[in-house]
Image: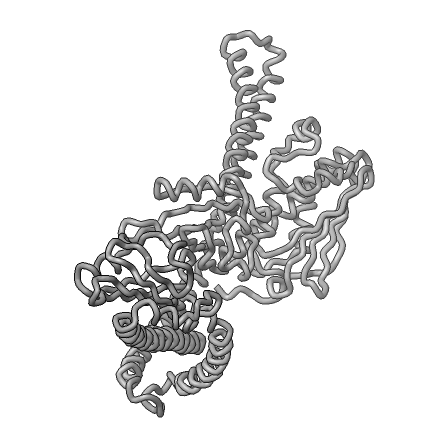
Length: 567
């Protein structure tokens, strides 16, 4: 504002100065021109009187017959006959001057008795003023004088005019600067928080009242907006789904904590292009689809997680104002679906194999194609495969119960007693392979489901026997330490390769499939162990070396090992 006031004052001063100079020069020039015209008329009148009285002698007296010196330097007299012939001239010899009959002032003087005219030089820097008058004898006497034009006057006065203009501009600039600061100073010191308490120009009072009213409205709107913003942040902050709001240029306006976690972003991405957060082509296509069709979706992998993103267009008054992105972590659903598909395929395969053996053997027996002495063998095969099916179905039922988290009766269970029971049940199968079983440790109680804990202990010992070597050993120990109760099963078996160790607890996974089938395993034993451990909030540790055996420990937390369940 100071700059504008300064420029306005300086411009006004410059315009006034220029206008004043033009007016002054015009007025002075007009005054001196009219004065010279009056003098020219007076000179012509006197000269006409002299010529009428004395004739040519009067004119010759004026020039003294010397054309180098005129009777007065600025005036020129020309005496013209009625036919236009120049009779006498105070500047040049008459015989050298052409006929003046066509000169406008001469022609009009013969017609009207008196006339005048003005002629300009080629450069417009000089003009000549002519006055002509008819004498009593019918001739015309003309007087002329040369005058400088306004342009000449300006050119002559250019230097002083410029000097005066520079001085005036400097003084105007100083004054304009001072006045601008003085005018703006009260405005700069306005207290807009308390508009009506300002001591300033009276003309600003309506404006200050309006500002006060608007300040109240703005404060109310800000409070309302802040409340809505806080409410929005609280709602979006507690969402498990990621929420990102973009404008029509894909600039991030808002992103909640869940979206930052899922997309691997931080709060600094606000006000930046979404491309800085995700440059995936499929994501760009989903956003473009939302802009064009109103909706787009894409599934991407972020930080090892499966993220499903829905993009929706936001419109206002028929115009696109932005987009909203909803991000869902579907990793668990994807893994569950994948596990379900794998489980279904594995169950189908595991059920199909013994059923085919049973159907084949039964069909042979039905058609009488089996010798009498081989009947017992085929019957035994049918029994064995049927038992395998029953075991598989029971394992599947147990896994389903564990997956569903069914409410079971919890009680205090002694792990050492369970270990001795499992060893007693497996002692015959161990003796067939000359495998020595031993149980060590102290009586340690944990809270859990007795049947599940027994099945876990049984499966660990059974697995250690099946994958052991002839004349090997299996040691079961129960201990109690700072971490809680620990059940450990150690064998001297074939060991598990390092690349397979992370997968041995998966359903139907077998390191050596041929050996598993020969031992009658279903491939669900260790998977059941893992689920039972998870059901009791326990952790499983596996240590194994090829040819040296494996050690599996189940660690029950202290609170689970010592505190009795109250339900």
